[in-house]
Image (cartoon, rainbow, N blue to C red; front, top):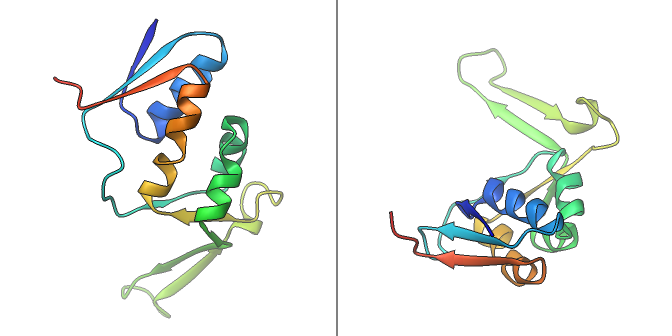
Length: 125
């Protein structure tokens, strides 16, 4: 039996990959999920990880596809710069998603149980 502390994106990913290797995993999370949280601005390199975890279709269904990011600053001439993911490290990853945190975490619970991970909310300190 293995335990992962934290059910956020990193903890959920670690738990899924550990369970994939045949370990029984318990995810300990102090907060009750789903909960209100502003959201997640994902990057293109998250997509292969979501595909490996088997949740890419769910991210696609709930996310807003974004081809890049805008950076606004009153300190520079023009005040705004666009960064297109297609011109980044790997042109084969030309987009990412903006999703609510609820959307990222909520579809994972049933999948966690199928993969041998048991979510445990309100873990005591």
